[in-house]
Length: 438
Image (cartoon, one colour):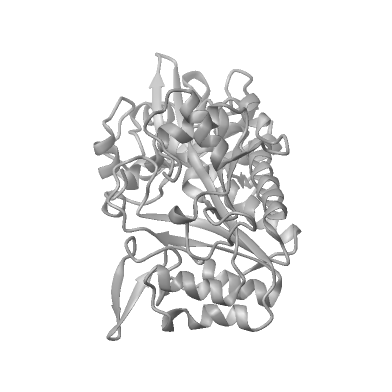
């Protein structure tokens, strides 16, 4: 080709495979600084961040002057040699020999200084470009990837339940209602009931999709829209389900440790702390024991039959060094479909997994009631429409089996594993959608 040298185009994340080679990278200018003879460009390309070094004596004058004039978030083609850089967390840099501007950027609103949360949320579409947000989303992506790996490796079948539903899994007060061709329909708050039907067809299934809760909560623990992973398992009792749950969570933690090293560095997340969360089994405590523990330690705002609030969950979690299961809650505060305890009328067979470090419940699950008449009675007691649940009762009429399941909230799990302080940092949505987040 007329003696031209073909330069390979790579991504920053692949720098380790091209040390000593001259390459071409498409990137944005995240930041820059310069002395009299050297310009330092902080470059990002969506895969990682690293530094570009422009030495005045080693490049044409116009290249050096261009480097000094580049503004934040200008997009460029960078040509240069990949070098190891032991001083940086990433470990590599590029010695720049050529710069070509692709798209200019002027007066970029998010500068390298402190900004208020409201300002950042109003500019969420741009805030995603920052190194911290980038790291959070990398961890989120790894949790999603690892979820599919775990369930595929354990012979689960992925099933997608409907987002618009005619019935509810947990009650009508927290539902978004919509008109569906002159019929009432609701945005799904859980795919669980449909997953029970799928489990009785495929044995072990899981769903992974958006759920909606019409809660006017202003705590950091509640989101209007979030993503949930909901496995359901036929021929399985609660104790076996708890084993699946702890194995799954430990797998997620290990996957983040194995594959998100740079993101954890950016977030300053202590890897040694995370390693503890891979040690199985996780501790277990009954609801009765949890109430007693709280009362003994000065919590006079909790009585048997109350649901736990954030301070209660945090204290219980801090009593252990790993995620902890709280077992068998009162029937009155749990969903209608949970299996009653065999020797007690006041509790059901269920469990919540509470994450350490004050992040609260990340999993809720139970063994499901399989007695047709009991379930019909519960539907009536909860003032639910029997006709809307006739298909659900069919699952108890035609070859029902013991089955259990659970739901893990993706956003809260991201918050916990990334070690971030505010749950809305984990959301990928612009402020228009994210305004509802606390």
